[in-house]
Image (cartoon, rainbow over all chains, first blue to last red; front, top):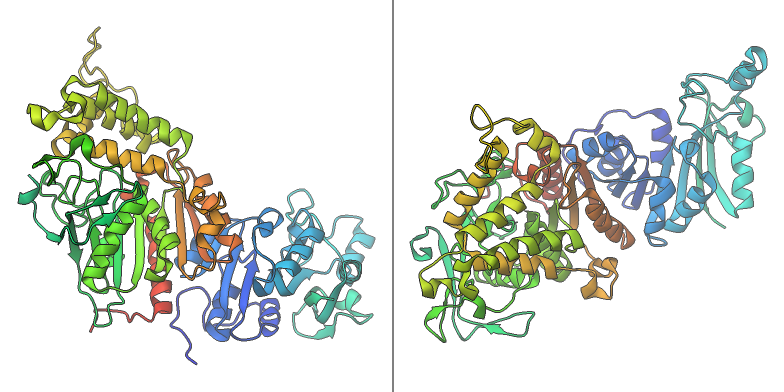
Length: 212
Length: 381
């Protein structure tokens, strides 16, 4: 096994802790579609360290251009519109990191992901985190935290949810949770996101899902 | 004229006719081509460059007729994106062309006179079939990459769809999987301009010692507008006058008129009117989906080819929507595809110009593909 030469992006260096959680769930040598891949940091990491057959989809053209210029297979596309084009079972993993809350129809996107992929990996900011709850409770304003950095009027996050909301949706759609991890605000300590405390203490959550 | 042109020639005799889509078997056949760089020992570093409607094989050298630099000289050369130290680049004049490859201006062996309108109608598929003969002759089993813009992009798509085992990567640029109604309409205006010229003589102008230069020039002028954009024309010319004041007549008062007239008159020096008719027709007939049961995705089912589809924001001749249709079809078969829409106000011609974002995309894709193909960096051994 060889580690390919560095091609820009983020090869060889550390990636964001939530992306690391996602990457750890991916089996080496698998087929991966990363939706909302940005400039391709995660894809580049997966290519280099997991030798995946990786593809990306990104809404912003600036992100797409940067990713393709780094030698990654990335197209411009919209998770809400373009997932229907892909055939069923085309990928081992379909990844959606920190993007679910920005989609127009998260339920459809989730269903499409598990149609296209044998497994889906989803990470999102937890709106049930104690800081969010406290912020709304004390200040009576839309919460802004380290993960939720936008003002209410210009946020792309139009479908925020809590960990419990998300697990409820999965149950309703007949989606099995294989693994669930939540990260606290320092991104260090991890809780089983299925546990009772996770919805209070987890600032972000990462779920590995498969069809029932 | 063609015998005096520099470069390589592949002559295919009557024993190896080219079976065309229209049913005719064409022989003999000459393919004129240029190469740059060196083929490596396992013949895995070949890139086929497919030229556009009025392009030719002189990609990266002074043009033998016009004396101008090669049309992709910015991209091709040592250390450039299409690196002649690393890759072996091939570009052949298309079938039906007029720069050495067999076309309507070539001699019909049956009559001993130029083919003219007796030349069979050809397709993009026929052009690619002729290129395939060239690859067989060069003993190249698989191209590392096939790349082209506009009609060259159609050939790149045809290669990937029809001969996927002969292509590792394909870069269709500013192109479409079919000629749209608007494309056909523009092509028809050009053809009608040529055929309306009394010097066209029903296509038999060589026998009359004439050339439909006015018709061909008008065809070129009309087409040239479609290669630019409103913004590009405005930036370059605005309403600027050629002289100090209006002539109150029909001289070229405006700079844009004078520019177009110049484009027309220089074009007729290097291009054959019948070739223009045949090649535009080949583009009109191109419809990759129609050849695959009306579903474009079927053209690429099971493909292993790595694709990089590129379009330009201000291209209204082959707008981004056409590239997106190709990408959707490729997604439907889970093909390996990259797609970039480059921001440029230079219109369709942007693929011939210095566009840093376009060049960064090409370079990144080629490097990534070369790594997957196992091509070493630097010169071939």
